[in-house]
Length: 112
Image (cartoon, rainbow, N blue to C red; front, side):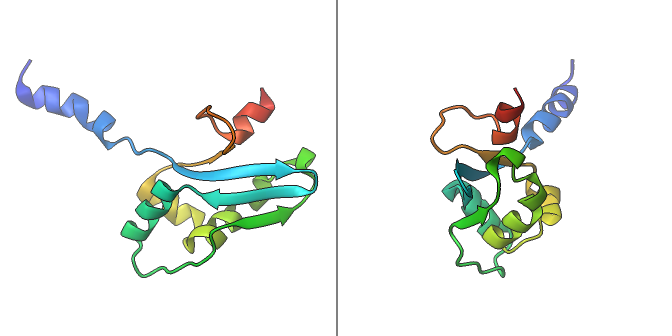
């Protein structure tokens, strides 16, 4: 196998982007959200003209219903960039429980 063929095989894996992480912590009357520091740094480096001072957002809702219907708005409030633009440029977005050591998204754990 040539060196070029080896590089071609490694390229897709090398381009895999880690997800942008938004921590989601539910309570009796809603969910709090905050962007992970590393993820916010990636957003600021990629979109330097966007300036957001919001570090934390709380959405009051019935936690049994989940927060999926608010995801686009939450992402925009925390980053100043539409969710679709972030996904196109930086890759997937993962909502995670900050108290958990698990790396799987909040929504996947709730369905299981």
